[in-house]
Length: 289
View 1 (spheres, rainbow, N blue to C red):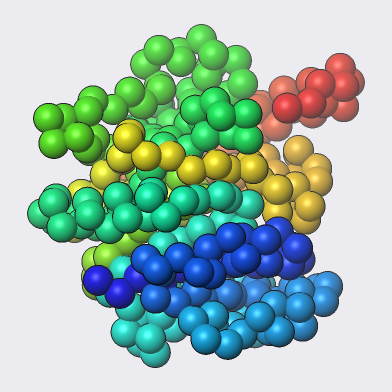
View 2 (view 1 turned 180 degrees about the horizontal axis):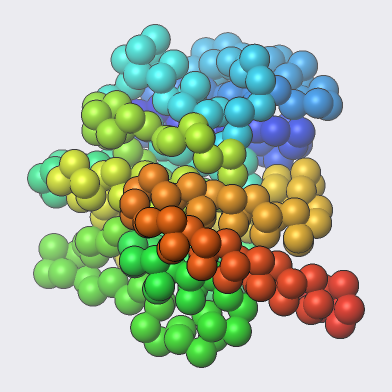
């Protein structure tokens, strides 16, 4: 196996460089590809100085979004460094060598494995959402609403079963940290670049499942995710984040779930109601989350 770590940066070179310093001497990683997603600050200059040895730097010609930037790094690693696998990592994560070794071992043990991820934990050590079920339109919309998500949590939350082999098969994993087979990603068409931010993971999970590849969750391993540090620096408004999420959801429903015109209309109405709900809770009641 030849593993390349892909780290996508946008206006957050400090966080990105911190991760590079943590993992640059890991023997499990043959290379690290830093992708600057057309930052508007001095990130490109800062990160380009790190280039050398196993560290590669490439700069996007435009900010095409999360999927676009990561695709640049994955293609570069596959075509120019001959990586067989990639470790896709957000800048705001902490991962150990032991965890990476376990991810690598999984590909040798599980036939047809396309993606494998460890459990996600917050800085406080508490386990966070680590996998999703791919549901139909109704279930996915219920999982979007603040109130409905709480009311139907029991049915919406993924509870993967650990098999005797020590792995769990899931539909999709968070994009903050996972390892993938490069050839499998190429076969699936990589990330869908029509989505700018949010929902890339579920779309990728959908594509993997459609092609017959397995997505594996390793519940014996974990990493730390300082959740959305880079996103929060660049998209501060909760309403703006929600609007981006809704736009990505609607694209997923149209192009992957193949919903009809009536369903599109009803979906837009429901998402519009949710935006009003969030506006009331944040702007009027002053709630934060």
